[in-house]
Amino acid sequence: MRGSIDGLGSSTPIGTMLPAVFADDDLAQRFVGGLDDILAPILSVLDCLDSYFTPSLAPVDFTQWLAGWVGAETDGTEPEPRLRAAVAAAAYLHRVRGTRRGLSEAVRLVFGVTPEITESGAATWDARPLGPVPGERRPRLHVALSLPHPTAADEHRLDSLVAAARPAHMPYTVQVTAAERIPER
Image 1 (cartoon, rainbow, N blue to C red):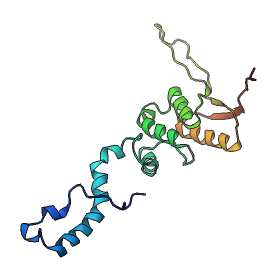
Image 2 (spheres, one colour):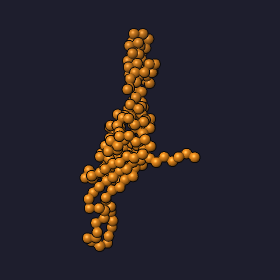
Image 3 (cartoon, one colour):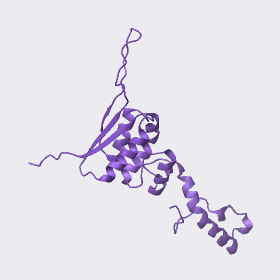
Image 4 (cartoon, one colour):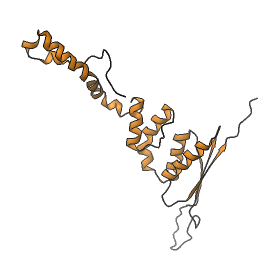
């Protein structure tokens, strides 16, 4: 949380801005010195405000708040690098939301692994009108993810993520499996 920092000097001390009559007044200088101590953290934040909205530079607690503000797919348990990546990618993910690429990228940001996605949709072009309709008749979406050490919580998290990032009309299934381990030689 933001708060006061012991010994943080003000970037614009009030005592130097007082009229000349108060320049040598000890009581006035101590009074505004107390205000400087209170205002210094606020002025520091305002001086660095652009850094607060840069996910790679912002303090972690502010980045967590920013994740909720921009609608990043986070649950509060991800490590700091993934949190910062999710916040940085939030605007892009909103643009591609509901697409295969958007779903794949959202899952990759949360789990660090690219999922295998199969779906029923397709697109084609035909010079003749009333050509065959591409894709399958019934919509479906299946997202499979291979993790080194899967848990039940991973499947629940994947289910929640796919439910939020899929096209609204699309029924879906998810599957989390253990990744094959390659034996060391």
